[in-house]
Length: 162
Image (cartoon, rainbow, N blue to C red):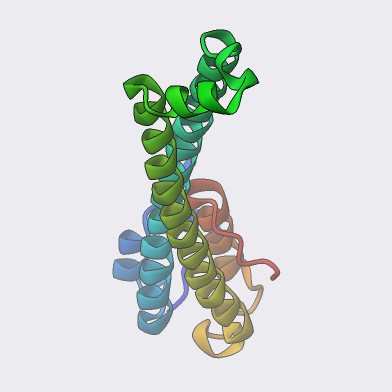
């Protein structure tokens, strides 16, 4: 049984997916897929935040390395002997190894963020493709529209188009 669109609102805001499920406004299969979609969206956001933080530290570390080389070791790089001595300094080794370590961490977070985004997009596209079987037929389509609006506004999940 579908409830009219105005019953999906509570005090000017949307109600949760759990409440919609309890009211019978959301079919069981659609509810399960939407919960999984929500979980994947949270995972995608988590990895994107980690990628941003790691990218910031990568830029910071590499900038510090380059500035150190230019400001403090500019004269040492004029000869091969000076370059050899400079590479053996602990500050240069620390900044260089830190930069490489953060680069590897960034590459891992970039891969995880891409995988999480692909997983989310794959399920979102499947939800859009299978919409005709996941949503019961309602006379005006308002219930489905309201649920999709809720997902877009509250969770930033767009099910209107691929």
